[in-house]
Image 1 (cartoon, helix red, strand yellow):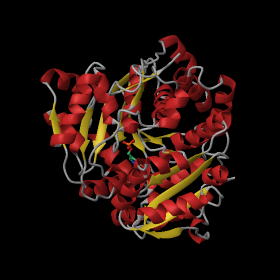
Image 2: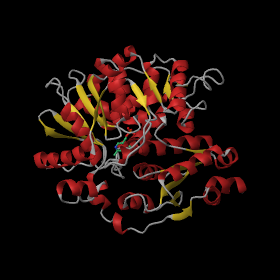
Image 3: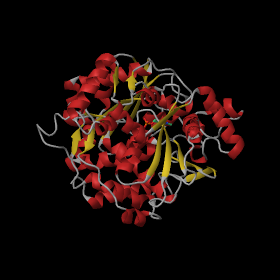
Image 4: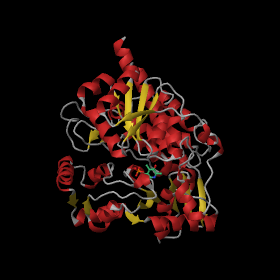
Length: 478
Ligand SMILES: *Cc1c(COP(=O)(O)O)cnc(C)c1O
């Protein structure tokens, strides 16, 4: 059965032994500050992949994820949760992540068919249900707190709004998220969802969340939990669509390449895992905007922290890609000591450099590309002119990288459409002169009444609010 270890090696095997899926799901970050990964990658042989070709998304999803669950969750219960997530009407297309064709050899995987129009729905819809199931079994409740600059908050809220055992508090910087993004969070009607508009910046929101986690008494009292991008279960759910897409385009007998708009390295790492599991992937392209720390790393071998600049693709405006640590762990031969040294060096000096031998391998695993705002706008326009498809700025960054690849013409290139154009209407209007429409099923979003609580940038006030609204505290008081 699959067990999980920390990339930093401590706090798992020596103390309590490797963790199971359920523990990893609820804990998120390992106690030593590392990230959880399976002890080994499960693999699928050609025969099994052949059998999967032509199966529905939900059936492939169950088969791909089961080895990661092990015996931690009852198989029948897990399969039921997977069906509720991917076989109902949560996503507005039967294929969940359908493909569209942009040119003879370039395809687009549409990851924006979920309730909040961004790819994070694919994982967070599953995560909310898994959390609820596990908590029900344990007779526990948790309080989830998180900060958002836009996309993650709404996907997390949509994923948790039906959970019986979860209260979710999302902090956003008042007046600093787009109207669509705010409405997607504040119009959700559920008595376990709380939107807090902090009078401050996104960094202030993040600092407040961090401070709540660092307050051991409060953390225990509220049974705090997080579903941020380092949670293993999010990666696991994202592996699936690389399989379904490659199988649709001819795998296992034909190789496929992917271009992935990258921020925290979660989505592209899931593709790397799919390859480790036996999916024949030719090239994996790490696509960045002007915040190109990853592109520079693949060029020079040096990972160097630098300031973040606001771009047209804000979900990729990151300084450190938290999930990169998972890849680095594999790259250094799963040597937790060596990995910990590198991460400590990065923390201390803001940089580290890898040997030529390691970089040779890294450049076999990934290629990297950058695309600035001007190129992003030009890409949205040329895609519209040539295919009549309206794409969002993140998708444009990925497409620009996909078109830069000049590989074997018999290998299809798939670029990931990570968000719907209507989430970023200003950039799209700037590029093509018209505003994209929200999909019909979100039609009256802009008219729905909003529910949010404005609070000052003050830890005690935010904690008071969480304490007085979380059902965890009500239960313990009773
Ligand atoms: C979150 C997000 C990304 C970045 O994905 P990572 O998994 O963090 O690399 C890219 N595009 C959009 C639209 C996103 O919401």
